[in-house]
Image (cartoon, rainbow, N blue to C red; front, side, top):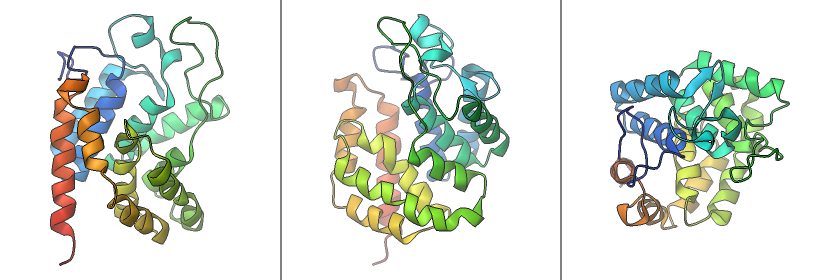
Length: 231
């Protein structure tokens, strides 16, 4: 479901994960070669969700959890940053990284979503670093990517069937596209032996109150990868 702001929301209209779903849609569109559509979605993210340079909210409307930037968690930010990296939007990436550095690389979510009291925020994860390195063309850190991309192998084996595919498969495809590493290649080979597509479709299905538009994009990504495999 896409709301009146052009953001991707749950089938029932819940918008608490709008940033995650919209960033994910944008990233998948780039991976599918649908650049103009992806840029339009990326602009929507900046216009609707970025309230200051590098500072975001889950949604432009709703309750305090939806609109308060102190509830913007890592799983929301990671999809937005992946989208910017794939788009090659270095200005937006640098603004986000600068804002993160000011918080000692902790995320914005220092409010509990139920009590709205202070909590320990998420810290910047390995996957975000690899996307930043690739997105900012820091090619001199390629040796570090050889090690950091081992994270993908761990995610293949430790993934949660519910949302694992949404949190690492697009990143893994990006890693193979930009600064290919043998560790990312191995992770991709291992991932192909998992039911990652079925898990993604289950997660985003209407039956689970997901966002069916994302199902279509994941199906297209799987088909594209299948076509590109050497025979």
